[in-house]
Image 1 (cartoon, rainbow, N blue to C red):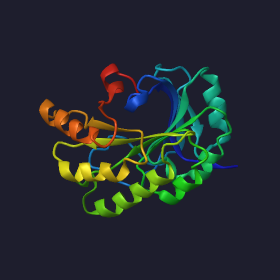
Image 2: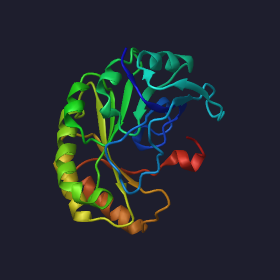
Image 3: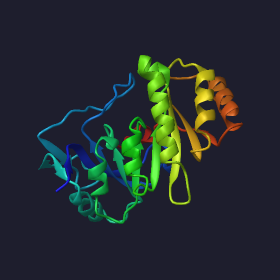
Amino acid sequence: MVSAPLIEVFCSAQGEGPFVGVRQLFVRFAECNLACTYCDTPLGVREHCRVERTPGSGRYELIPNPVEARSIGEIARSFGRVHSIALTGGEPLLYPEFIRGIGTEIPLYLESNMSLPEAAAELRDRVRYVAGDFKLREAVGEAYEELRDRAVRCFRVLRSSGRRYTFCKLVLPERFDEDELVSAVDELRGFVSMVVLQPVWGVRHAPGELLRLQERLLELVDTRIIPQTHKLLGLR
């Protein structure tokens, strides 16, 4: 049986990007291959995965790690009508076989740092939605050039099509190189339906700065400014 270490599984509303508000089953993977400066997700393999059976209750059932892929579809169906299964992390692309093994017709929504193009290629016919990060130099430091190349390859493989909706999420730290960001979007624009500018939670950018950046990017691709709304609502 195909299995993977998970931190938690729960049902909530999507809080980021163009699908804000849709009801999803969230599957949080335990490991990540990057260490971004703004990451606020506790990671690491644990003995058990937490499963919240009643949405928003804060009460969890513990199941042993690693978790079998086939059980994810069963859990999703227990929550009734969900828009999709959000594969998040950590980094889901570390486990392409697990993702392929999720036996359900519920659409899969991949949230990825877009740094593993070979794994992305294994899932090109399996994921319906892709929320792909593009990491700015200020978040990843010296690894930027290599990660930029990997991200472009991932977006090319998982590009928007008639069968898949792909958007790029740009998390904005307090300071960033605007020209470098615009150059990256120019390279990605043929692969995505939208770019989402998402300020780091707790960082306040001048409204004029955000609107000027949006205006520049709208020359290339549909661009929206969307914060993490789930934190505003007190959701997971």
